[in-house]
Length: 64
Image (cartoon, rainbow, N blue to C red; front, side, top):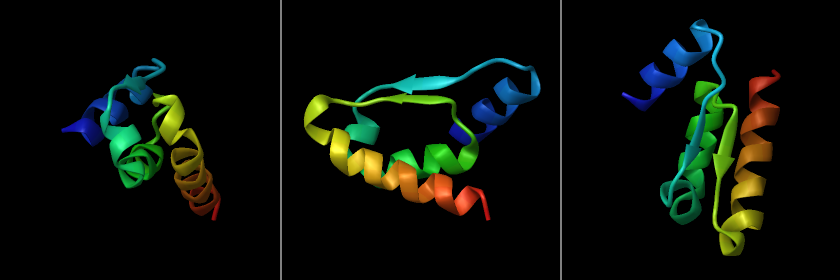
């Protein structure tokens, strides 16, 4: 469902982001969001470094 919402938003030319606890608690979820094409993710300060690493790896994989 989340992937479909991201896809639909991008096809409509809209930016899409997610604000919530899930990417903070589960950095691999942030990587999934990047793979889906999300534009922005909000995370808690204490999880920033772990999430940033997951996002950077996911973005690098997308460029291949």
